[in-house]
Every structure is written in C-alpha cells, then in structure tokens.
Length: 403
Image (cartoon, rainbow, N blue to C red; front, top):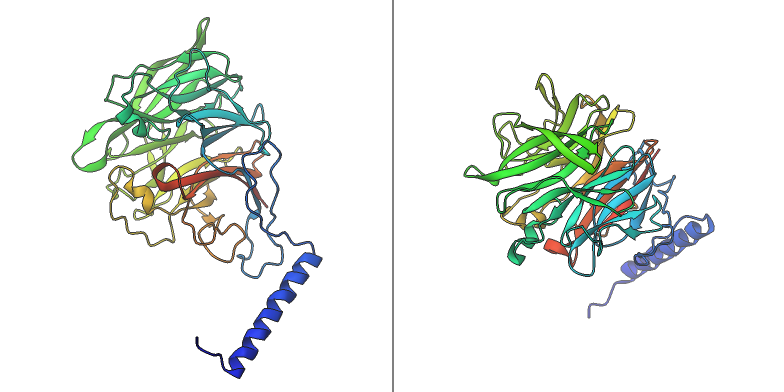
C-alpha cells in the first residue's frame, strides 16, 4: 500500500469535510435526494425537480422536472387529449408486448390487450389514440407468425404484423389490414386531428443498397361503419430520391402535412432527418439538416408551433454494425425541441451527460418515442438504457415538465 504524504492527507480531509457540508446544506434546504425506482407500482410517481440553483445545469433550461412514471419494461407511448390517458406498450410476463393504459402520473395501469378474446395474443404495441378517445389503433403480430420471426415483430419493427383497432376500453377489436406473410413491416400509426385519416410507415421488401430495405409512407381514410372501423382509399408516398427508410410521426395541426423521418436525400443508414411533406403539393422540407445524426420520433406540440424529437446530435457514435439489432448497442440520443419551421433548436434532456439530475451514472440512454400533454406543458417520453432486456436494453417512461 502507498502511504499518502502529509499534504495529500490534509487535502483528503478537507475534501471529505466539504462533501459533508454540502450534503448537510442540501438536506436543510429541502433539496431532493435521488432515489432508486421502487418498482412498477400503481401509486403516483414521485417528482424529482431540477435544482433551481444548480451551477452545472445550462442557463435558461426549458425543463422544470423529469419524473419516472413507468420504471421498467416499457415501450411506445401516446397521450389521449380527450381522455387525458396515456396508452403505452409494456412487456408482459409471457414475453410479449401488450398495450396498457394509465393516468399521466403513472397510476391505475390497466392492460387492454392481455388475454382478450378477438385480439391477437402475441406482440401488440405502437398504440395511437383516435382524437375522440373512442378507438386505439395498434400493431399486432400475426397469430401464425413462426416463433423464429417473433423478435422482428416487436412494436417499432412490425414484421408479420397488421394494423388493428380496438375501442378505448379494450373491449372490442377490429382487424384493419391483412398483409401477406413475410412481405411487410408496419410501424407507428398516427391519426389526423379530425380523426378521418390514419398515417403509418410500411416496409415493402429488401433493398440491396440499404440494410433497412425499401419503405413507404401510407395514408388511408379511417371509416367507422355499423360493424366497426375500417380503412379505405390507401395512398402510398415515397418522398425523395431514396426510399430506404421512413418512419411516420404525425399530421400537422391543419392536417395538410405529414411529419416523418428518413434518409430520402441519400443520408447514410444511420443518418436520419426529420421532414415535413405537404400532402397536396408533395413539397418536402428537411427540418433538421443533420445528415450524420440520428433524428427520429418528431411530434408537433398541441398548438402546432413547436416540434419535439429525439436526436444523437452531439454524440460521436461509431456504429460497428447495424445488422439485426446491432445498432441498438451504439445509439445514444436526447430529447430536443425546435420551432415548427426547424429554427431555434434546443436540447431538453441530458440523460447521457454528467452534471444534470437525470444523468444515469454513465449508463448509455436512448430517448425515443414521445407524446405531448393536452396543454403542451409536458412531454411523456420513452427512455431506453443499457440493461437486461430486449437487445440489451431496458426502458422506462418519464414525464418531462417544461418551464
């Protein structure tokens, strides 16, 4: 053992005294102390406000607090503005994802697709609320999908899946599509604000030029007849010169445009941008213009003036492979916000950066699917992080309160 010198020993004593003093001041001033998650409880989540006097936080930060509302096994989210309920995906005990419902504070969790007659009983996820709150559209793995393909049917990948609808209480189910086996992936359905149209992304097949394959964006009329909802008038869009990947995000506030991510301008397989496309003129606008960054999961604010999305901007990521689920081993992202025209970009979260309350101690984090609150002062977000879970990632749902 190396014996410390007298000066070094004195320095260590001073350091310990300073740590004790800071801890005493923090407790006496009522500053929050970080605690480990207490499990998947139905009790309301405990808030951990950001310290107002933090010297490490960015000046003028837009975030007031970040609260964990589902601490494990979570998937995609969507917030009903009519019912003020959040639909989300969650891994169940049978090894499949199901659609659940909860209050915004994380209480009163209820599974809508577990052991329900008339509903496929494999992977169910990517829930999307109808504006009326009467229906939820989701992706459902085909019951006859062979077991070896089930890992590719996880919501957000959607191989051998179809679009289904259910009533908002999970009592009645309706199949909307019947894609052929081994031909399609279907992901991320979203409704127009008037509820008359449905928007999703679809993988059409393989592409020699890209690991992701050939993709298209689809928009259809959502019709509710005497026997329940169905789709008609499906239109296909493949904006840009390259069709290697698209992911559907949202309709604009006037329902005349669609928001999506992809690499239609020749970006790399790991360089997605957020785009807006006019459905009538087909005019395409790149809102992020960061071809080397991974930009995804864009969502308009309720007033249509801002867009929140996730981005890898600021991270120097080397993807050693993106085959299969390998890309999940390298990606790191945070939540960002910008004006609807792509200006005034600002970073909201710092899960991957020391010196911020939400920092997870060096555990790599991926902020992904998001949804706005009805009044636009909160964003519910899925945060995946390294751990024992699908593709080496766990996931939690957090509530980001904006200042």
